[in-house]
Image (tube, rainbow, N blue to C red; front, side, top):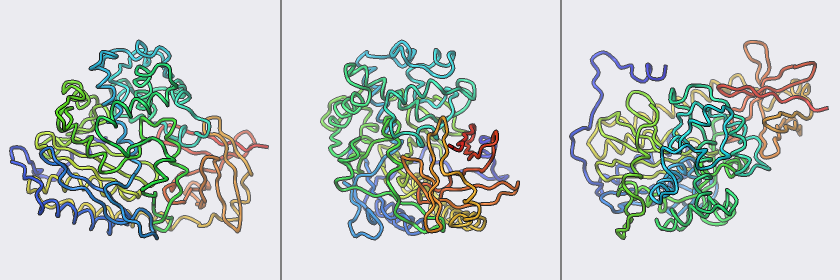
Length: 500
């Protein structure tokens, strides 16, 4: 269905192609065009802060920041400000695997159970078929299933993260359809690091392996998985729109959920550091001093097609290759609560960029920025500015329309019928708090105030509305004479049952 809709075009329309065009270098004027685009987009989208770096011809040609680290405070964002890079951790995790293949510690086509015998998925046949290259291919048929690790993580460990994979069943055939799995990506990092430091726990082994084999050689001096270290220095705070669409400071609690699965998205980094990783990608594994950190062959294996993303793009191993406009653009995004990031590079042109934002609304900047980069480099038609304007208008309209049906704070008469406590086998506990007419759902690890809504089918939903935690919907129900709250993702249903 996605392929059908993404390939629909008006009769007679010819999509712009940059194939065969010579790229312009990122000189002062073209850098200014990109800077102006970022600053104007920030205003339209309500993004407090952005950090950006650009590389061209093996040199960093710009690095700097725009806006502030936190709304209401004057400290500016610069190229050294730390952001959660979220899923941009994945490409660095697979870079670690590339080094291990070079060292003959593993093979891309080797079954994972041969490397790590205790690896187990919920389906035995799938377990046997998973090769090392499939751990971050989004092609194994395992569904996203994120709710289980973002709701219940207080006592989670890397070891329990791998154990959680053992409960997951595929919902499509192997290699049939793109299904993004953070837990599989986490397994890739932890298993690879175990081969480097077999006597350490999985988390310590991963942190040390990434430091010694990736961050130190690349000179990524500020990049860390240590939240306390990151939050103690120059860092950006997370933001998101409140229920009325006003940009607001958000709580960090939700973002601790990724620590037990950090190879999938737990790194803190700066534009100054992350552009060094992009430089390595463009240089096919060669460091600025001429040393070959990883072989071109095994670095490029990560850009080989693993699963289709539609008409013109495919997913590799923690990297996306898109040829929509006739030239390959390699990229990947990152998304945690209040942080949206992206990296981009044009391997044929030697040009790359990183963009780090401290707002959920930053997600609406990232796709258009990739388009704007192509426009600037190849003198393309100016579509990106309009794309941002359209995204901003659609976002505001959606919030306004959705807000019409919400009762904020939640209707006290409806909330009065809730139990005080609920429990889910998969997602843990939920306590209902009420103070000053405001209802809050407290999950232990994080909490949010909620609104209420009467649905078209007569049911009642409670919906989280705190910035960055917007949109978790719990439908009120009854199962076996007990009050329940039901939350669903695209393929699963989870039931919170009242606790006596």
